[in-house]
Image 1 (tube, one colour):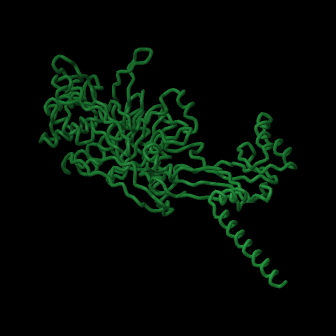
Image 2: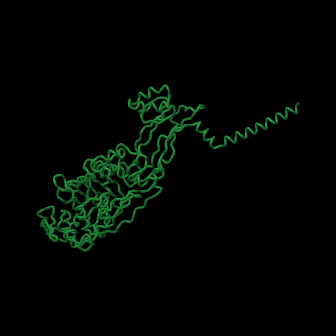
Image 3: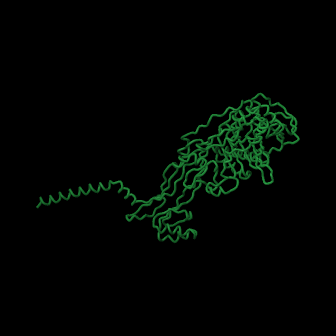
Length: 541
């Protein structure tokens, strides 16, 4: 009897061992593991942000505001309260989600909704309600793909960086989600990685604030003269990256980045003529008797003072912006010499600021287009077939400040992984040699005199010394009354004795450079000087 019991027990042990092996085999199946896991949890993906875009001090330019998304676990006892919390037109949409019986996401509920099963989650908005530097940052399409600006240039990197926010629910044995709390919110990814720009957020804000009040259509560019780094690029009118469709319908082409676009530059080009003349051995003392016009092969070119300026030298001609003087100077120099210096001062050159993000090259005619002396005359005071960007005007001005070295514009500092330091640095390009230090110093005295000595100069700041040149350019565009529209310019720098900022202002459909662009420059110079004083007091950049 005992032997029989032992045999039965042995068979039972073998069967149990085989059963355990089978169970172990089944539970080792990846498919069953995944099924079991899904039965234990339920995940809602609340949002996925793109990588950051920072200013030069690692201050965020995007993702600066947030919106509330509610993760809702439907509860029969709170359904009526949730429906009452939303507008009547939205109740049916919310009800359809509730009656499914599964956790869901909604942005219909007020941020302060308090009810069992409702978990508010803060999610970053890509663009704020008053987004700064929108023309530089660009925007994304409905699928989150960058289609303009830095968003497009760094789309792959920005898409892969960023943070994913999820809400995880635990399921009971029946597969029903259990109530959860804030600990269920999980954040993963690389929230600090991003692109670091040369833009200074506060300088950009100053330029946008001033320009929005004083410029209808136009642009302001602020450059660090020693490096070519762009501290601000403000284009007007501005646009709303949160509503591109509405922006497209507005007048004035708000999506056009006028900082990168080319315009006729008028008398700001006289700086180029002066540099070419001085470098060619023509002395600043060269005089000319301005009678109010000059005849070039039968074509008359008028001075803005119809009675003329009388006898002027190069310095006086720059201060008074005397067209006949510069026409005479241009004819003496010849087209090849003018074009050589213009090219070395950045004109006619396109700059790639980021992958696929270019400034316009503008238009600098070649020598073959300047066989006619009248064409040379037009070019000599920035007219004719001649266009340039506000960035190029900043480069020209910076060259004068830098002892004759023209910086190449730079917009991107590099890449950061931690939001505090650069892990990849974008090196700037070597500057162009444009003129000698002696010539550059002479031009500085000219430009400083243009602000300090010109009667009724509206570009003169009150808080800081400055220098620069006005320009009033014919456009070939006319209003309903047949009056030609003008583009008004001021290109200058400050402080005059130790320049830290080069600034170019263009106002489309302006009156004159002095009347329309000059006051914008003066206000920017004053406000940035005040900003520097505040930063010095606070010990910040």
